[in-house]
Length: 350
Image (tube, rainbow, N blue to C red):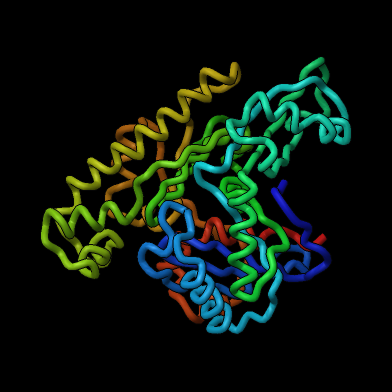
């Protein structure tokens, strides 16, 4: 499922996650029976060049991406990337049962009932969730994104000298990596919470399908700014505290407050799903990813509020990787940041 593109017959896939704070590059080799991660690289993106997922300065971001590919020695120009945020809608809908080819003919009309965008300027895709079921109605996962968002990402890559083979959706790419690494979490209602630099993406999975997404305007930047503003810490010192490099008792109160914000967002998303789905039970488990999953005490704070087990998700727990893949970075430090980029690079050559 993707908003745009087709991968073609390449044996390797380059996944590129352009985050607000850090751009991540992952290369996965699909030539063997099992995918193998062969390269990981990251680079910082200038402050405020990307704000809440919106690229404010394409030139600076494109330069950072070019430098990332050059430093990593990656010459392949075709990449898989993703878009997300408030200009992307993911929704589980019901429509009259029909073949996929027929559904593709009417999906735009169906989407008009559910998508609050001008349909003349929207990229659409869908997936039938119960193709083998009986009955007059079928469950469909609908995804819609404003065309300007997709075209903006493609234009940015062009400026960086790259080509977007596929433009995916953040939630689906994250789910792709999560499903590979946590096959036992594909039952019941599970929360997958990606805590990034500026935004936290909440993905609710029902029976292994990402049926609901929400974006919260809180990320690791808020934690760092709390410590800078109220405790007088320098930016670098505050960053070391939230990464757990330096211990500080001052962090606990901010973890409690910001953790409450994230937990409420997760609760509301799960509650909305419960009202919309007859089969949905309570939130069984929650997994965290992104830089925020490393903040000391945050997973425990979320578990206390949500009354559910919360644990950090590892995007390479079941993914084979070359010993040299992490030559340029520390595997323990960078792994929590890679769920999205790994999910993108897991797109198999067709």
